[in-house]
Length: 223
Ligand SMILES: [Fe+2]
Image 1 (cartoon, rainbow, N blue to C red):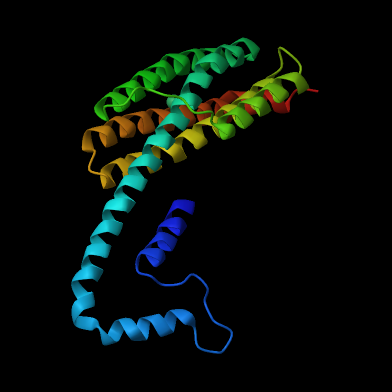
Image 2: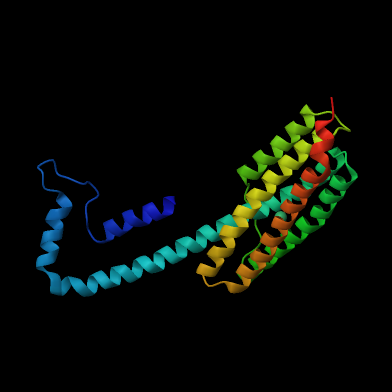
């Protein structure tokens, strides 16, 4: 978002428009410049088109850079989850929940590999950039483990809640990135990200089923 704003600023500089809105005398400085520009309309027209083209190219490369940066962010998040899921599996009480975490670990390793593929298609080396959001969500999960008693369904409820926050973050990220890849003309990458998105949604639904069908009820009967 900040990049869009800076793009607007750079466009203003390029067209020679001052950044201050008024000169304090009622008439804005930019209006004065615009009036002069309008009087030279014939010679200005081709120049304006060139500037427009430049801006399109600039925005493209900024968007590419942003997309690449966001891929590094989710790459870090997935790799972090590969380390976190075994801890959640160990902390879980219900066998079905342990299995769900174990299954999702396998799926998450595939997500890392799929991102390796995405970096490959872009001709980039896979790189991770710390994802503050994922670190925060997983820290919250650790707090839940610390605050609940081992072997209880209440802990399982907490673990499901934490895991679903993870899934929802990933669903939001992959949904946005798959669409962005499409916009940038990377259809193959978009399909890869869509596949991961479907698997995240599936994991989320599985956790909902576990909570609704058994674990919430079991926790409700705990003292
Ligand atoms: Fe994932």
